[in-house]
Amino acid sequence: MVAVICICAAAYAQTTIDKTALMDAVVMAESLNKGDAASLRRAQQAFTSAGWNDYMKSLNGYVDDKGAPQLTQEFIPTGDAVIIPGNGAGMIHAVIPGTLKQTGTGSAIYHGVLQVDAIGDPPKIAHIRMMIRAKNPLP
Image (cartoon, rainbow, N blue to C red; front, top):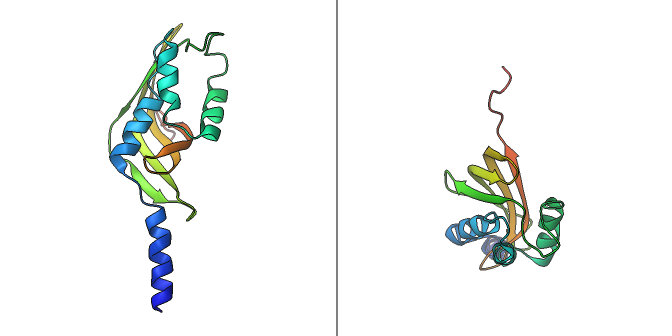
C-alpha cells in the first residue's frame, strides 16, 4: 500500500505547475505588436519547440517575410487558470478565461477561454487554442 501511495504522489508531483508562471507565459505568448518582430521573438520564449511550430502555423498569413506579425493582439485574463493534471509525464492542461483583442486590417474582440497544454518549470506551452464563447448562444 505504501508503494502505491508513493508512486501516485510522484506522478502528481510531475503534473503540478506554477499558475502565475503559466499565466505570464500565456500572456507573453499572445501579446504581439504589428510590425514588431521582437514581440514575436519574445512570444517564442513561452513555447516548447513543437508548440512554437504549431503556433506559427496558426499565424500563417499574419507574419511578413521579416518575421514581424501583421496584427496586434493581446490576451487579457478575466479569471484564474483552472489546472487539470495531464498524462503523468509532466504535461498539464489548463483553461484560462479571458478576452483576446486583435487589430490588423480590422479589429476583433473574442471572449472565451484559452486551452493550454504546458510542461516544465517554468512552464512552456506545448499547445494553445482559443475557444470562443458565442455572443448569443442558441436556447
